[in-house]
Image (cartoon, rainbow, N blue to C red; front, side, top):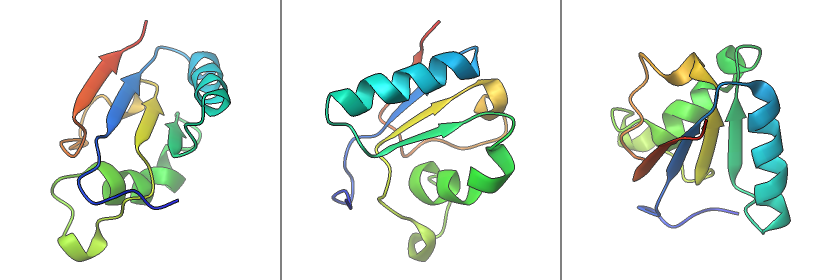
Amino acid sequence: AKLKTGSPRLVVFSESKETTDYLKIELAKHGFDSVLTIDSATRKDRMPLVRANFDANAPLEEQADDYQIIISTEVLAEGVNLHRANVIVNYD
């Protein structure tokens, strides 16, 4: 489901992939289906999605509104502009 442009976005950082997987499952149980998870194994493949949905520096024509929540291990802690997110949480 497409989000409205400018919809609130959340970034959650966790120390482990097990925790990011758990959080995605729990959020899905409560109706949050626009959740993207990132870890060291998926970072390369999912970076275009991260940039399109969360990077404020992405050109307007490349910006997307497919994901409202991103849950990541430390792989996104540096070098990625996540300024389209309204809230950033360090979970553990």
